[in-house]
Length: 142
Image 1: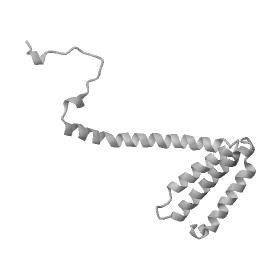
Image 2: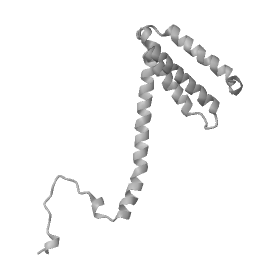
Image 3: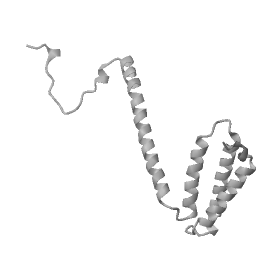
Image 4: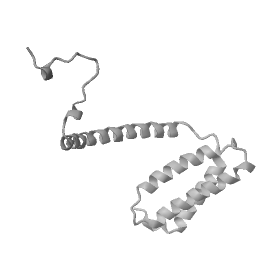
């Protein structure tokens, strides 16, 4: 015969959360062991989503100036993220180009949003390249 504390509990479909029955130090230790696996899983998911997004960017040509600037912004931000903290000149250059995009976007009301972007995009990229070269970037090419 079982004592009152040893009576069998009815079986349920609910899982038993064992962490509730452990001390705080043991729970923290378990959380610390689980965290790297979760971070790695999240990073892997992010890389997969980024790869899928970049594939879409490559496969679909922009239909308008806003589409083209969105692609260019994405690439510029990737470039800026890879710059060393000491590379203030290139960071400033990227910031200036992004500001140019914002300024040009406000003038978009006078231009049809569906206008083909080839000429505008080439002019913008030439302007960005001119700014880059004039900033002395030619000497920093490896």
